[in-house]
Image (cartoon, rainbow, N blue to C red; front, side, top):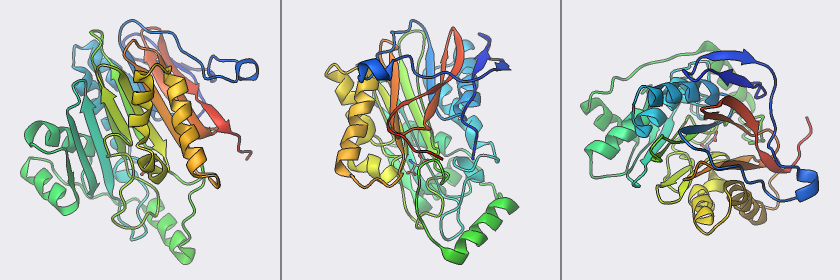
Length: 333
Ligand code: ASP
């Protein structure tokens, strides 16, 4: 697994400079027991899930710095992680399903609520760009499977065959017992979700994943589903999710977070309440992780997860940090 701890300061141009440690959320859990409210932030802000958010945010920040739109930023930011073949949970380097196929899901949404999504596609390096193209070139929101692949081919996306011996070997080893037991922070299921705001206050979000390792062929998680893995409402804010997608879909997780912010909850309180609903619905969570990340339209942000271990990359004009999310339950190694 990735080491998810680290603290990277970036220059304003987005150049990685220094790795020194990690920061935790600013709230004092012991005294307040309440979710924290981060201060509003003037100017651009980019947030994305997990440590792989660091290079993704750096790219998104660069795009914004060069005058690109916030939609360009969230697309090109997560595309960096899609192209990283050492990443086992996003893109063509991801873990396969139980039939040995790597199937990819992604979605994107803009300030005005326009959305595009693609699910259960194979052999394309950038499902996030297919999702955006579906949003911009069709009257639809989501295409899946063979139809999505055919549409992508017809619309200029080149397929790519990737064979990674270590991944093949891990799948062959897994086949011996074929036991599927998702456990928080042990199974590889670390989607990248990114939510961002540009200098003018425009929001956008993106989400892309290879889904849960060894899933049933055809399974689609929350990540490409607008309202589950991602939701953006320019009047309120944006949210994205990571973890066991079935738990997020059943609670319309990201939509829930945005609606809670609409009704006055802080970003972290909203994420915490969405987690609380999942925990309530699933008392036997048995180590299944879910994390939410939220951004309010004034730049305030927050995150919360079922278990410890979830963190996110935060980029503002002050630099870039990896921040530990608050959590409901603690897992020991
Ligand atoms: N949410 C993704 C899914 O269920 C997995 C993840 O977050 O890594 O497919």
